[in-house]
Length: 204
Image (tube, rainbow, N blue to C red; front, side):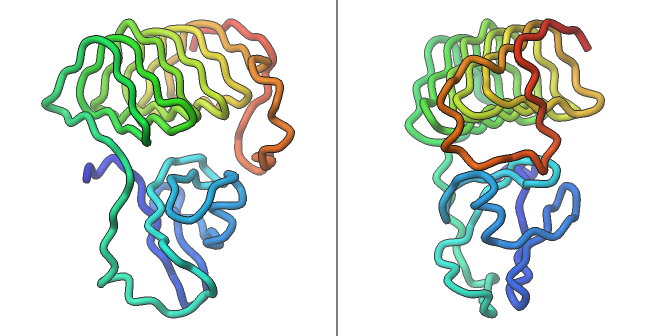
């Protein structure tokens, strides 16, 4: 698994985890509740919004667990750094792009993670969440959220209910956060640095 992916290390005696990106403590249950997800799915840190793979299979109580013996089996597809894809890419699970992709990417309600070495050109991206630490040229439509990390670069139009742009990220295009009407049922991410911008055109 690429070192670009953020993992949480559990401190199970106190039922806490620590984000390897911002190093802030998170209760295990909060990492799911804050993002409306269930155990075994991919999540965001509610503090810094970094993306991590959750390897908690069954956490009923904050009991001591021998995590060194647990075998992580993430449900995620990966386009490796040595791979280039041209055309339409349809995936029925979360996807990490470490290589180059040119064309349409369809993930439905799943999460797309573009690593710092990942590049997407002439893009038409449709996903549940899109986290960008690499380069994207094209349009992005997300059902929940788009996060552009400090190493990320986007040139194109974004439609999503929530947007996060880190300090140092590059963006040129338009943002429409009014694209999805049914957001009331989702958990509130107001604790994180998430902007509700309406319609905005900007260049960073």
